[in-house]
Image (cartoon, rainbow, N blue to C red):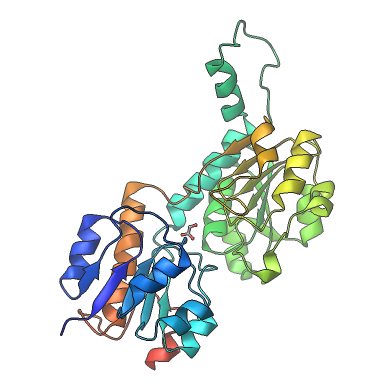
Length: 331
Ligand code: GLV
């Protein structure tokens, strides 16, 4: 009998077709984010599930879905999945690293530039019909080229942003990360490790790229914003919750920092109401990896993982980007 899998969100038909070569697939054609009881109900009898960053895979869900053997996400961040709980339930978990690195770095850089050069704020002004004359300091922002870039979190995406800054824009690159890069990689990126306070104090443009965890909750709040230059910008493409959005809105309102660019929010898709009322912030709806080829590659990688994790396809038993591969005996 064919195994059953669930695609918990709507995804490219080609990805569903690939799953259907091996499994019976239930899809979510309305693409609503199912409430937890609905997700649990639909997972009954399912051996695998294709998820995104919006599904919460936690202990109660796992306890209620005893047939589940694989949770494969098309996101790189997996703070929505309790990996240790999955492991203890014998459930393989995979994410989708690498395929989105360059696209996400492009977006992080674009958002930082839009923030520094006040692109959204000035566009809103133009659309409101308020542009009556050119003037010398109209929407004058800060330079990106030659400025100091501060990267908080220096994983794959952080490094790709650092490379853009150093090689493309002649920026001085500082970074802070729990672990330091090899000296050779630092030299190649032209990046220097500094402690977090120095990073905040010395950078002109801070880009946040750390994964969300209990340890990174509100990594940047009032105290950290107080260290930054009043001319500095902050860009968050990591996860909501890494930045204290209420504290950031207050810092933007009082011009404690100059501007912010945010692609992720605490409690998204809700956005802190105070952020919606300050002009000096560029807001985007969690789209950093959203180029069509990259979203296709992310979906394909999740499908590769799901097929392999459930023992089918050419890589049967060897899902390429498993997070708990020891479960299958090949860590
Ligand atoms: C997007 O935020 C991802 O984690 O892939």
